Image (cartoon, rainbow, N blue to C red):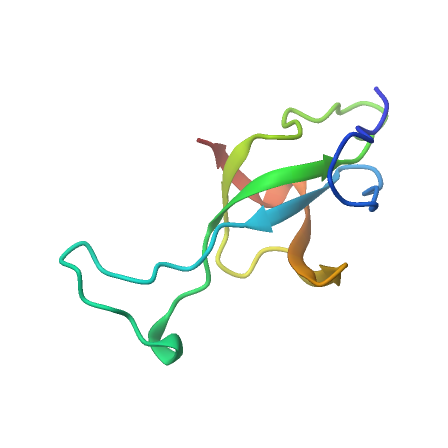
Length: 97
């Protein structure tokens, strides 16, 4: 399995790592109340924009374009070309939505 190079960023994760673009933080509650910047929570949902090649005995089960749920403190934040991304291991992903 080869790393997907058709992503919109020029970063190629290694082994079982994936690059995730976090979803934007919620601006309003379900009732229409505007949430101030100081009270916003980190999003726990995002879209995969690049994947690694997987481990020798464990191929990756996610692919570019999948929307995933991950842990609150999962991954490492990086900035590429002015955009924020998370790079994390596939095991930090809880589910594909």
